[in-house]
Length: 373
Image (cartoon, rainbow, N blue to C red; front, side, top):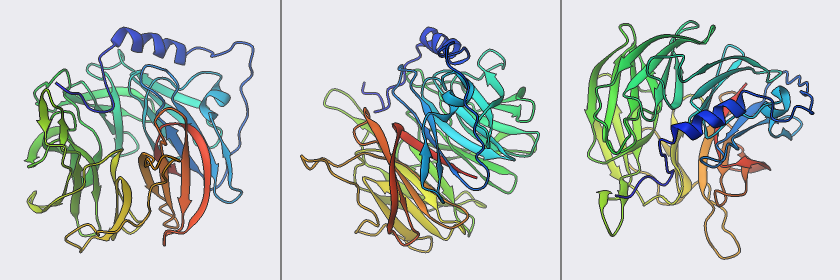
């Protein structure tokens, strides 16, 4: 059986060791640096390599074009942990889910100092947190790679509140829930690992209320547009000569969030890197990473043939691995994360809304997510 390209093994003992290292001083002889990042800025979360404990956080000032790398470690004199999965900003605090370390950090968005944390063992069911969604100032959800539960917690106190049972069967050790988007009182979440489900959570009662079954496997990214349409992209599963799971063919879906009906199902080229969705600030334009970056209006019924932004290639003509995309909600500028080859420092490219390159800079290994102040 072939496993997803991002290989996730339970390795809980190693995760505990990494977590203990992350919560202690990385070098007792160093001093914590002081930062004052007032105004607008961009956080770039760098996943690192699995089991290497080298996830990092970068911060970029668009006005001065200055980038500061490894700001979490420099501000707190401790490592971020193993496999930085997602970063979300809420009310002046950045929440970082570090999946294999089993921890959610809460850091001040201006000085990058830790203000709170929630770790595996403090909750009933959280194992490997993936993404965070805020329902209010006092309630947030955290999805999970292995646990068949969504964790409900208070983001102000970083304390556990409850668990939502997803009722998803385990497949090869996974029972994952991933990204979340909200339409009215309903929160949609995709089940990536060896699944073809989009789950629907009643956020008032904190229970699973419905689900949507897709024709393709492993829904990987979601976005909600201005018309109340939920866009979902799958990676198609993974196929090998020995055994197969899915057909390796990604699909793009448009689903009516109110009726839960699938309105569009389009096959895409097989992805070589990440496959990710994002929208412009008013959610009328959709951006899709599928080898290159494509742009389409939400009224279109197919992805354009020609890419909007092309991935770089190395000296041998091998395409770089585009791994993440973020759109600045203030001005529509597009940030593309280039993992290059998954082993060296990644590159972030900043584009204007019309696709003109403005700046590029190096960050940590495997940049995968953005958060905009």
